[in-house]
Length: 478
Image (tube, rainbow, N blue to C red; front, top):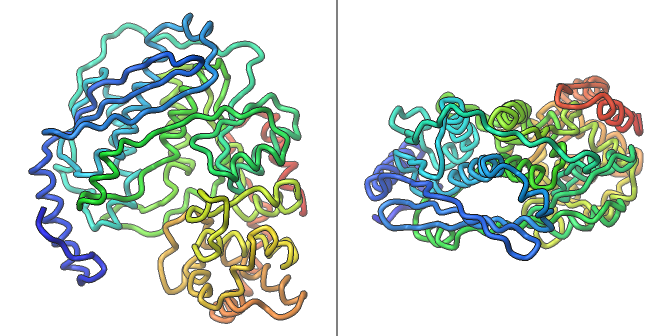
């Protein structure tokens, strides 16, 4: 590979030219990514799945996923094609992380057939789910030669769709953040049969389950191919991928294995707002957490995989409503961690946009000392955080590429948090600086807060009982 300068050291036009040259060089070196196969093996009570993905000419990736506690008596009765299609599509989504290393112009799917519906779904996910990757690396997703997908056509035989087992609990994805803590709490409060599903859990995910007294979680493990990590250190492309899409496919496969009627997650409606546009494409760090992907996967999984319902329990709510409801549920306060930087160690970094966003939301509904106790300190006490708060509000910089709420919610949270903290004493420097910089916009944000706190979004994926439970939760603290 030719030597390259760090993108930040180059002017914008030069960065894009350098990125284009690197893009073309890697594509010449690697003309195709091949999804060769997936293999399953029984490992005690677990099912081990290994995917074979080759970056031509000579780099083989073999990521693995292990599903534990498999009810083998059920699985052995399943039509092989039913489970096979679920695992096939899980592997196809795995291909996204490996395709982005070199962005080859062709993806060859040999692990199974694809019809036009499946091909269109995958290409749409590639383009939208990698929007942040394209933007950060200054690549143009509009290129007509970006990628083609080659696969055999399926036969016309109907695909089996096994029914869930009567009485089997649903699965619920728990990542350890504020949203899944609230969602799990709602399900348990409603006495809903549910089993948490954890994927490579961070400490907070287990802590949330313990704090809320959930049933024993189903802990799935996923191993990234070591060669992918090696390439990232050798000048190949790296960047954000639609992890929640992979989680949707994995949870759907786990539900089929366990006879569960649904796989639920806790994504809220705020995730649907992007940060900016790049080459005609909305850039949304949370694309696969948003409503558009949820609706697409729910329909796709029903048509192509099996009778497993996929839905986001908190979809009707915004982040402001989520945190107000969570503020009224102290059992989870010492357990959840909404920080991508420190979360793997079970801590808050207290400097990233997600930490500052969460601290501001919590400060709108809880006393400052309680917020500091939850986060292990007060992120709003550092004056440097004012610039991040303003970016969250759409002032001075685009909305950060992180799991944060809408611009309107951030502005309302700053207004409400400033009012509460002012009543407790002096404003912490970051909050005070942001409130001062917002000026007259702060009053408009304060006036907008009741609308945001009373809002209700798309609930088409929920059952009537789930809608009622979420509505009751949203009224906590109202």
